[in-house]
Image (cartoon, rainbow, N blue to C red; front, side, top):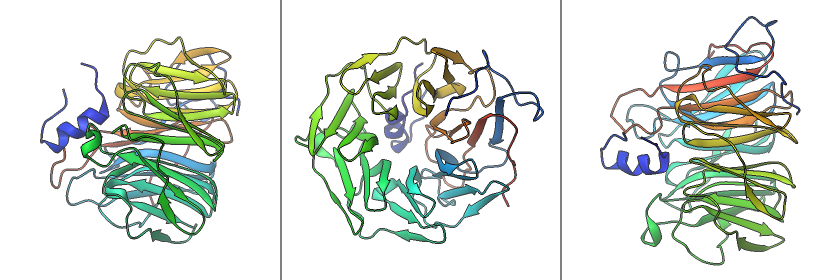
Length: 351
């Protein structure tokens, strides 16, 4: 049975269980010794984490953030992990509302967004919660161009026009405020990315792709078959959108379907450099674009459901996920997952 996590979120609320140039090797590799060449390393899994990790991002290989939370499992708080190049540390954001995404413009300007309209800022030293919250809906995506220019999107999956949807918020360096789209479609937006505020994309339910050129939002023709979960670009002329069994690419002007075989539903996409991208999804789905061909790493651990992809400046890919489609249960831990593809290894202990 194909799994779509947006639908699973609705089922969970009802208490129902849902049924830089990258490495150039030609196939998947499991974790090996540091001199074994590039490979996948499971950094954290359900044995070491009690909460899901839904997003991973950083400014360098020695400044990496992974965020998530309990997703309604009472007894646990939101989680923020930070890797400083030598060790992992758990930072104390507080609160039980889980983070769905992390992004920033630099080490002292990191935004985290999540459940019930939560927006939290990290300046490298302390957290600041944005209050009052501008929406009761979940914010699923955030992107920042600079300390004075950031965007967040969200909504209520499958809620239509009767629920908070079509949510776009903008940060101007002083305050967050709504930035309405030209029309209300009643669709949740899951991610936002751009090269600037004048070249911005937001994607979501019902194959929705909005593009902001200058100050004007335009709705792109629907080429996908369902919900689109993530948008990310290697450049202004190489932009990817993914969701379900659909992977689309834009050259900055025209969208087209990418010919790729997916044996499970996909959730995340990220870029290491022009022509070097990676995707992930359910059941350990992991594929890398290497010299024009997609290499399937899905048989390499981790085999958990994966949600996001990020590539560091050294060309290593990071993926995050866990059991984020499981219904919420009080005092029950969630098996989070974090892994890395690249040379060498990173610590697997949280200090």
